[in-house]
Length: 129
Image (cartoon, rainbow, N blue to C red; front, side, top):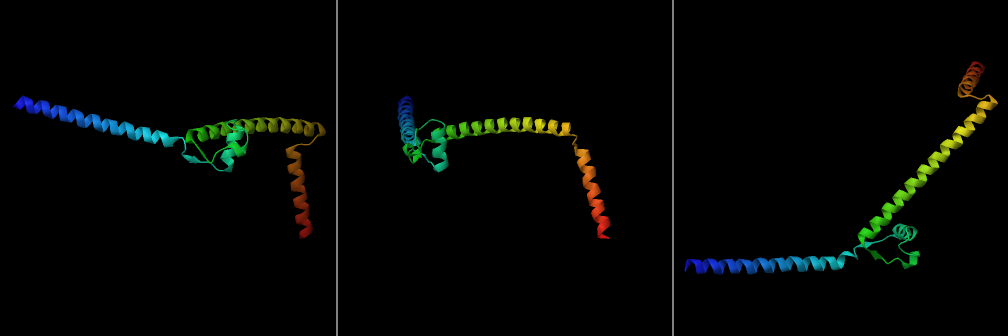
């Protein structure tokens, strides 16, 4: 009698567990259906999606796009903008080096500009007395 109850109890637990697992899997399947429609994109994100090549025009971009697609576009734009900023910084540094060398050839220096500025300030102070 005891073994019969144990067998029945084990079978009941197995049925309950398998039905719970089916429910978990069905919930996951239902969640996966809605996962691709999750994020409402704004105008800037639409432009990012076009600039990264996901869509050809802004008008083609739907109002709702999968979150991972939007994140990938944002990350690519973040990297692209950072690269452009690094190139602009390097170009700016080269321009400043060139302009500094030209000023040095003309005989201009920061110390001379500082001395001249102090001289003008001192003259204005003497005139003001």
